[in-house]
Amino acid sequence: MPSELYCLGYDFGTESGRALLVNVRTGEEVATSVLPYEHGVIEDVLPGADTELGHGWALQNPGDYLEVLREVTPAVLKKAGARAEEVIGIGIDFTACTVLPTDAIGEPLCLKPEFKAEPNAWVKLWKHHGAQPQTELINELVSERGETFLERYGGKISSEWLFPKALQILQESPEVYAAAERIIEAGDWLVWKLTGEEKSSACQAGYKACWSSRDGYPSADFLGALDERFGDVVETHLSEDIHAPGTLAGILTPTMAHEIGLVPGIPVAVSIIDAHAAVPACTGSTNQLVMILGTSFCHLLLEEEETLVPGCCVVENGILPGYFGYEGGQAAGGDIFAWFLENALPRKYHDEAASAGASIHDLLERKAAALKPGETGLLALDWWNGNRSVLVDADLSGLILGYTMNTKPEQIYRALLEATAFGTRKIIRTMETSGLSIESCIACGGLPDKNLLLMQIFADVTGREFRICASEQASALGAAMLGSLAAGSQNGGFDSLADASRVISRLREETISPVAAHTKIYAGLFAEYERLHDYFGRGENPVMRTLRKGRSFEAS
Image (cartoon, rainbow, N blue to C red; front, side):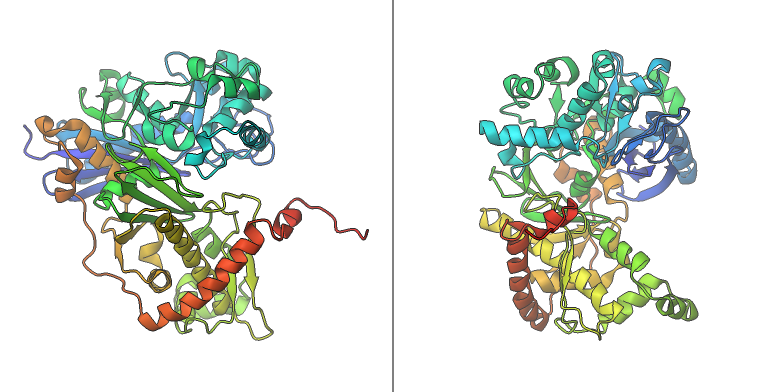
């Protein structure tokens, strides 16, 4: 056996892909390499064609994903001074639901000349919202028929999920649908390319395709009622060979090993959604809420029993084998703060930051930190991109209450930070009142390191102590850990998550504790937040939906 043993974690995001090399004997994150996608997010015109895309479209080129593997793999080995023979396991996480139609051997249809100019043949990125009409059709039929499968998802399907996107392909481009042997998640497709084995992930299937280990996919009768041509979509276009993340999908083929600079035979794990990969990186224990704080927020919890939680998803074996994985989320987090900094700051604030040699983020955080809880006189609803949990309503919008002629930008900024914390407290309360137990909170992602004020506000608003994941690449680290499980101890990896966690998972020593006086003030503000939450979000006043749909207010 080689003197050093490593696992590779591949993390595929919206704009780029990365590789993280982890020493499985020491847990050290040895090196990382990142490559932006050549074609990025395709939102206007297809590359190499004159085909214009409609509103809400977001596509990608699957060739970019393969280029990431070809470029970052040798680069990360070179940075680490590691040899290909020392890599014992591979794990992949991918932002989801990101799907593409392929032929029977996994070749993407968009790369075939006859489909190059057809938008529905390309990868539909997670944030593709072009399937909204199909989404509304599905939700209406679920309600009409009294279907129960969406109870595990808060009661509604999203336009970002698989079935709306697949139905869009059928209804808009039946020739693409007929040619497709598979409509597959990009993470599962990469595993297929690496191993030659098509093994689908219970994570993607469970959270994004309404699949259950007990009930399977939605019934053929329901799917056929959506469109008579759609009733056999599971049989003809989806895989039913579904496995928990971290289980062995197959081994690296000689062809792909040569192409990306590794050796054949390396075990490859079943894929996982990028946010969910952060859970094993944060020790992966039950009763522990893992919060991924980035442009949007994701709240994940492992339990041994199944409980239905309003506005949250629950999937058996969806995150780790043997557990029910609960997911809540906020559709905008860091995006809200970025929106404010980009659109609502006077010039003098930018000048002040420049003269102080500070970033505008640092300046705003310092000014907002000087304010006491309740001092701003403002209260906001964090729905700039709709509400994901617990209302599951994309038609809701943001709100700030309490402006005066004396309101300053730092007060608005702090109110927005507080609003996201209130949204998280609402999710925590909903989980606990539904019967789940949350004993600790751990944060990871881009924001915990960049915005300490935000983390203190989260602690104060929730009244809970927060730990921070030691890794700045929690998703890639989690993917590498799943690769070590696929390898198993016989290959130098691990046989259980507990064994892997003891070596690899780390939290920072310091904690962020709530200030009791602040928590008391925030309790009163949260009560007002909940009143606004229910007033605008539960139908008493539908003005947000009315405004978003552009309806006129004509006198009767």
